[in-house]
Length: 387
Image (cartoon, rainbow, N blue to C red; front, side):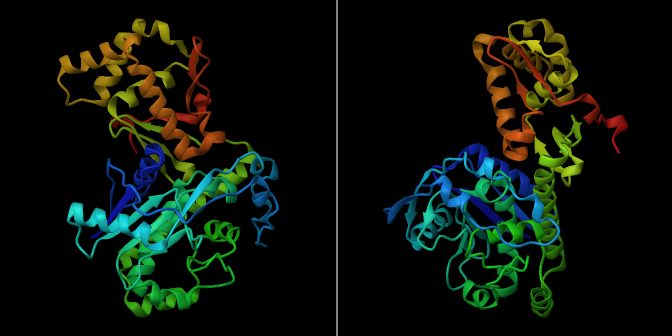
């Protein structure tokens, strides 16, 4: 088992971080991912502050690609993004966060630590590796929506998995760098110093013959290799579906698994969104009511909500179950609104705004709240009809 610790710096949104951790955890294999509630502060001082403009991305020449070149993100989308200011830090400042985490949590040297951050670095790299074989890394989370039609979840997951595999094969950045590809060929070892080249790497999500031969020669763990490939295949599927959605405008089917508290999207390579029992009960309730409801009338649906919640939390004491739904139906408590907001954020982080809005519980303030996805694209899988 390879223990991989994913931590975040202070400014990273909890929802963004949780979506990345949750996404990686769904792939079984020797890589075992650990997430944490706390965040960490970078102790150094920023070298400088930069702010890209929309024109920086609008004027980029996209790399030439085979077959899928017509699925590039549109200029109209790119120029409306308003990139934020970014603090740039020295290389070691980012790894100091990992060292602090290792000390506090007593993490073994053999375990890997990834620092997920919005902060920039002096070399302008998406991914950085500590020198001399130390298993500390960072991944930059900003600007992905400018390069590809995606939230950071998928490109970050790709780079985490690729880095774990490269570390297993080459052992250190000093050994790895000589084998990187300066010109992009759609391999995980593409350098991508010209940032738009990363589109090619992610949408191809492949490993070239030379790199595969090095892996064979190194005696790479076959189960690790297969797990990484599953991540790659999923990421490629996610990105291509999003790009083609602009043309086809066909929404993916969604399966609800109440016993497992999961929303699953088979056409997105099995993308899974895990919810808490009360969140799942709320979402299931709105799925069952395509016409929606006024939240001010939610107390009228107490029995229905209680029945759904009991199916989502079968081991919970009945009195506790009733208390949870009592609180949910008390609008002055704001519990229902808070859970709806959390569900919305999880869906956005996993599906993006354009696709995700069809699966979110939405509606104007004081008006009817509903989920717009056509119910012929939704199926509830109960234990007696699970595949």
